[in-house]
Structures are given as C-alpha cells and as structure tokens.
Length: 282
Image (tube, rainbow, N blue to C red; front, top):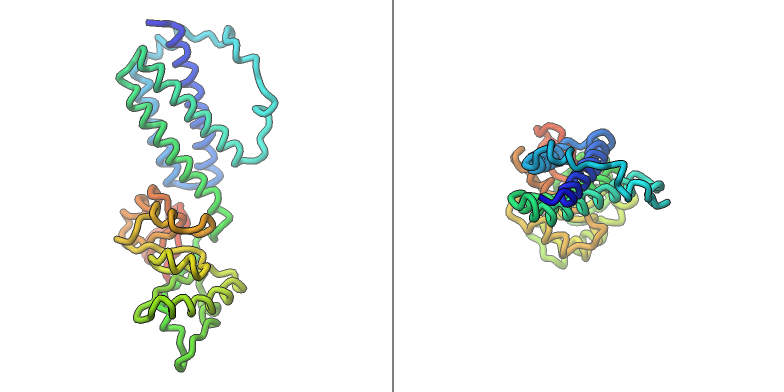
C-alpha cells in the first residue's frame, strides 16, 4: 500500500470531520433545528462507518502532522470570516473538497468505500441548501406564525370585495383559494388584497397556483398534497417567493423539509417542529 496515499486520506478525513463538526454545532446550537441536526448526525455516522473500513492503526502509522509542508502555510483569508454565514460556507466547501479527494484516492487503496463517499458528497450539497434555507428563514418569518385559510369569496360582503377584512384577521399568513371564479377574476381580487396586506406586514400565499402567485405578486404558494413538487414550484417562481407545503400527517413534515420547503402549513394539533410552521387557526 502506498503510505503517502494513505497519509493523504488520513488528512482529508480529519479535515472533513472537522468541517462537519463546525456546521453541526451551528445548526444545533444557533439555528436550534432538530431536523437538520438529525440529517447532519446521520451524515456523520455514515462517514464514520465508511472511514472505519480503513483501520485507524494504519492511518496513525503514516500520520506526520509536524512534517506536513502545508501546516505552516496560512492565507489571510483563512483567518477572517465576515459572519456566521461565511463560516458555514467555508466549512461546507471544506467538507465537499475533502470528500472529493477521499472519493478519488480511496479507489487506489480501499475502492469499496469510494461509492459511499461519492454519495455523501452529493448529500452534502443537499444539506447545505437546507441549512441555507433555514438561515434565511430565521429572519424571514416568525418562529410559529398563525395561518388563516380562506376562499376569496368569503371576503365579499353585500356583493363587494372587502380587501381590508384580510388585515383584520388575527393571522400572520393568509392562504387563499379561489373556487368558482375565473383566473382573471382571481388576479383582479388579489390586486386589491396584496397592497392591504403589505401595509399590515402579513404574508399572502395562494394555493398551488404558481402562475397566479407571480402575476399577483403574492409572497409565494402553498402546495397541497399531490400538487407540483417544491422543485417544480421554484422553477416557476421568482427567487423572493417562498414555497410552503400543506402537511396533514406528521410523517410528512420531514419529507417537506428534505424536499426544500421554506415552511409548512399544519393543523393546530401538530406538535411544534423545528422548521417554520404556520399553524391553521381553529
């Protein structure tokens, strides 16, 4: 076995594990997110299992930290981080680059683990996207907003649309459907409702209709079970629009999280979860 290749693998494994701990600590203690922490913990356990295929005694036998020509080379950019987000970005990059190196060089000495390392690298990109969404949503939405689900027809009083009614509803998220109206009528109604809610700092979401959300300049969509996927919705919506998912069963919460939803709409009976959860008013 090439001792230098094994030494490279040992260094890359240490670097990946260190980066993973930096990310996991932030998700656990700052974002306080149980679902993302669970994903990272599972990731770390899988990584530990794969690297366990290479006996630690072999790795230690070739470790020469003091003789490593790279330990004395540090760039100024490595000593400076602008904020926590830059720390996360740097350490995700560290994880992914280390995994790529491990994936390639393990083919030389332990080819059986190369495929698993490749899959972990892909998983790291997914986890990075999830953590970034959580980071943004921490300030974007209230921690546990209340939601009101309405049909636009309920806003008609004596035959006239009363957009101001929405602003008086004790909810942070107004989620609208439009039964028995044409698309043109729906857009016209939303044109009156959106400005009123903007003044009240309330969020307006429409069910399933990405096209209507874009035209009416709503804050995003809520996807019902069986509607288009979160990924498909994002392809249709501007970047500033949020994608929520209506969840009727508790088992759907984690799937919505993994699919990349910004928030979930749940019945009040659901226990609080770590992602942004809008609870339907009773």
